Length: 236
Image 1: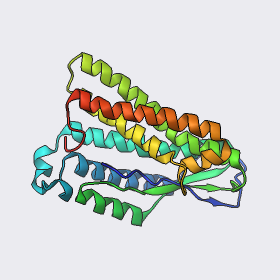
Image 2: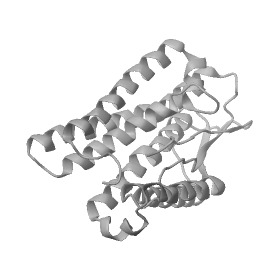
Image 3: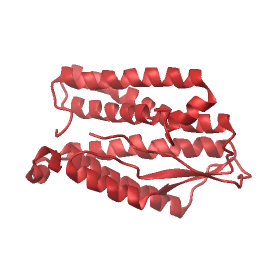
């Protein structure tokens, strides 16, 4: 489905003087645009309309309210809440932080979605005043995103078990939301380049190992649950 979101953030040298949570019209606009585009990307993937599947005519025939709601929910919990978690922790630690979309990244995500897979780098949380040598602040801020994802993932997975026992058709969609959040968390914990995992590892190796192993195991369980449930993971 995806190669994983390349979420990262940058910094500027001016430290904020307040720990209050704040936003701006600019940030809300950036979040809104990125959210709409990523939701549409996921709709393309879930309908199996991408060229990779050879089913370009299936988009409208497979479009449904549960699918749209699931795509919107995945983008909200997997991406928006992930970025807001970075922002909240950074601001609580006294730094200015706001999300900024990447127009090039959004265009590229649309391009890959039309091909049948998704590589998304929709934007970044910009943090002001967090020094590159402040490993604890970077580590805690970085870990907040994956932890938020896995919290949603566990909630959706537990709900899917209840739905399965009740023979509810929502089981698939809940499993999907659990897997997407688990995958977003796992990918972002890879300790490479600008990903969250690199910053967590530099801060405290033991925290990174425990987080990566547990979250990776959860993601694997949710993926296997699709096999048990007997519903294709993609092109639902």
